Image (cartoon, rainbow, N blue to C red; front, side, top):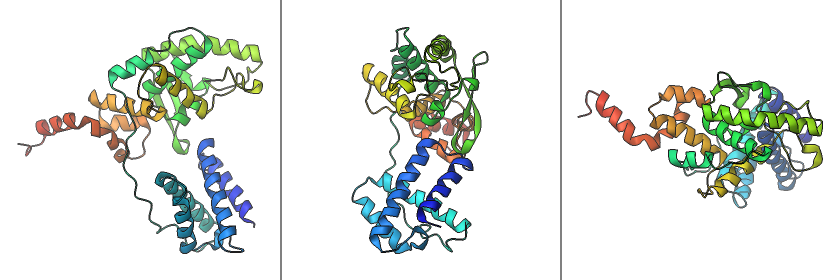
Length: 306
C-alpha cells in the first residue's frame, strides 16, 4: 500500500471513527503531507512506515526552523497518532514518535474580557439587518454557552430549543453535551431566526440545516453554513468596532465565560461539564484569575489555613 493510501485511510479513520472536525482534519492532512514530502527528500525510497526516531528528529528540527514551537508540537502530536494507527494495522512494530520530546512551550492563557468589557462587546451590534442580527446572536451564544469555535460553527437549527434555552452541542470526539442560553442569547436568536428563514427562501437553500449561515461571498455560499473562519471574522470585526483588545479570539469568549462563572463562585466540576472538558485539570487552568477567591475559600475551609 502506498504512503498516500495510508494517509487517506488514516484521515478517513479520523473523520468516521474519531469524528474530528474539518478544521482539525485539514491540519492533520497538512502535517502529514509535509512529512511525506520530507521522507521523499530526506532518504531515497523512505516511506512513513519505515521512518526511524532519527528521521523524525530530523523532520522536527527542519520544522523548527520555519515554524513556531506550538506548530511543531502539533506536528509531533499528529505523527504520534499516525504512527499509532500504522501500528494497529501491523505496518509498524513501534512508534518512533512515542519518545520524541515535545518543544517546551510557554503556558500562554487566552485573552479574556472583564464582565464590563463583555457587556460592552455584546451591546455593540445595534442594527436590525440580517448581518448584524446574526453577528449579535453569534456573540451572545459564544458567551452564554461557552462554546468552542468549531462547536458554534457546527450548530444546526435542530440543536436549538429556545423555550428552555438549551443547545445540544457536539464537542471533541463527537461527545454530546448541553449548553445553556441566557435571556439575551435567546432574544438575539429570536430576532435572527426569522431573517435566516427569509434569506434561505430568497436563495433557494431551504435544505440548509446550519444555524448560522452566510449572506455574502460567492453566490453558491449564500444561505449556506458559515465556516469557522467566517465566525472568527465576525468576532474580530465586533472586537475591532467595540475598541477592545484585538487579541480577543473566539476562544477568548469561551475563556471569559469560564472565568466569569468561577468569579461568580460556580462549582469547578459544574464548569467542567459546561465546557465539555474530559479532565478537570483542563478546567483548572481557568482558576488563575480566581486566585483571590480560591485563597478566601481555602482560608474559610481548611483547618490548618491559619
